[in-house]
Image 1: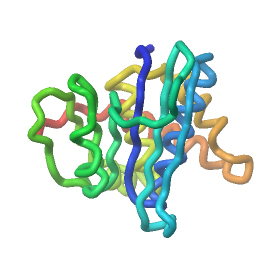
Image 2: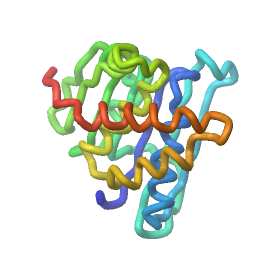
Image 3: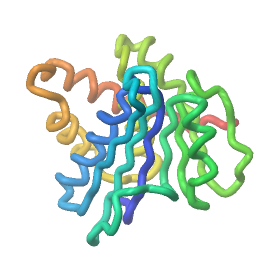
Length: 183
């Protein structure tokens, strides 16, 4: 399991940013770690901006704000442009290349491109690009274990949508298996 991590997830409202953050936070809860989950979204919600800060720690968390993330998941170009420069040197950036379509010029971070939206559509998992990216984050950082994240998915999916838990787990596996793609 990775050491303390500050994670920023960002995109448009409706892309499942807050849900993806909830999966990561629930994994931290299952792992017995200290955590914070702080959602932020524009007044428009769907279609507006949305981001979510998740802190996972073995010690008390002083502030839930993530201003210098160890890891960034960017699901659209405006979010990528807004947050990529704030990632700490040695940090991890994972982008949905279907939506972002760009590569960083930074040489001091690990950079992964995953065509998550296209992969979700190709695999009959529309709307689960967010979970594909969580899978890539898991394989890139080891913030938890696959078993724990699957349990976190079960905890995060509402009873009303319990039938979607298996689809979310398939999306997680697709992201975990995605090979590093060079810019």
